Length: 255
Image (cartoon, rainbow, N blue to C red; front, side, top):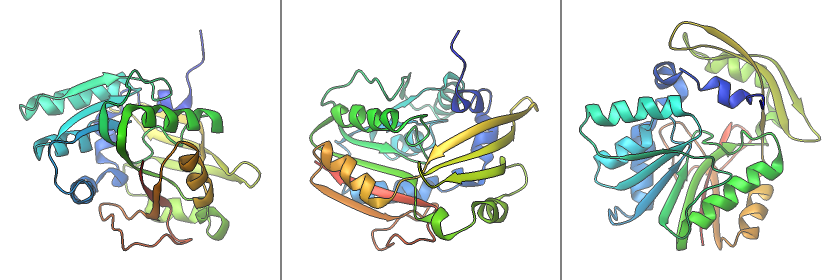
């Protein structure tokens, strides 16, 4: 039996705790930005990739948009379905691997926020497969909005200091951080307490990208307009120029 990857283990029985993490508290502001980007056109069909507990899916549905949420974690999707049911919202949530999606030209917009799959994969090729599959899911005038880790940040800042400064009580904690300059991968031990109170200690690694890499990947996939911005939690803005102080970057690309 194939060994589970860290991101599969992390999100098992973690829905309640995930919704309390400090990095998940920007949903309303992020949805405000998405709405503005869509020019409030509620006829557009949206795919939420790596939707987790459905926070963006549910909020956008609440605002009148048609959204389909997909995620690799059945545990996260179970929480999403319960939240939607509680609000009497009818939403399609599917367990899907974003590296192998069944959609072709079906969605006007794809969102992939808070590291929704990309850039968690073990190899650059797998991360690219996510971008490729999501792109194939979009219509000819489709648009993708996603966040990813900013490779400029660890070149100018200490990841250890960043994690300590951002950490709130009850959040996941990160130790033994090591950033590999050859691969732009960060390796660490992530420690979380799941919804049942069990402590998990996982060997994790994630890929940081520099803006020129993202631009090249998206151009390869046929995107014509590509904007890369800073990504402030709950306060995305086209006026937020990317700097070395941004841990994440916000990418908006249109075909």
